[in-house]
Length: 210
Image (tube, rainbow, N blue to C red; front, top):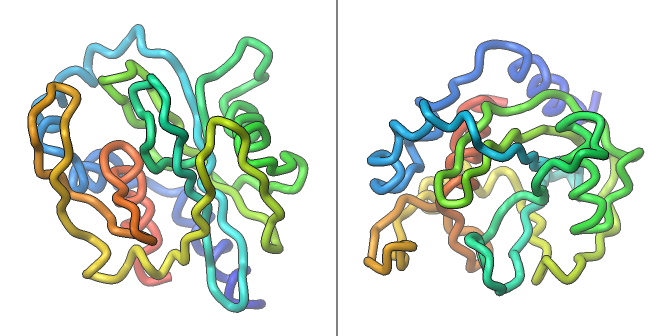
């Protein structure tokens, strides 16, 4: 069994067990998010959405996909995230939502992806979305093409996230207009913070030692 196949097998096993959930997510939560934590208990009217955490092998390394969103008028304009978006009535389930959105945003053929589990769901107060992150893989480096919603695609070596220097802090302008220092991942000259960083924190915790 190759290195990538071994990683995927062990990750699938761990995704099938009790997940660290909010405890891991909060390690990368902005202080403003901690203050909003109570909202998660009242998010019954939240809109459903799904994202795809896609792994693939590349020259002996295990990589995954992130996207830099285009600059527009949306709440998450210009941020780094996983491919994904809101559920549509035509989606048979949220797994289908994640695969459809990845197909639309980065040109990933849904039939090439094998899903192996999911991370803990996460409520995002600014956009009132409850996000369901699904984890999958393809067995070779995919040929991807971003659509107009995506400024560019980041192909990230998973080992980057494990390096102490990658986990840092960044001053950002919060939606309230105030400067806020937030925990973040510094990857390929990009700052990953907020919900995506919280999901990555849980993923790193789950994959510890693999």
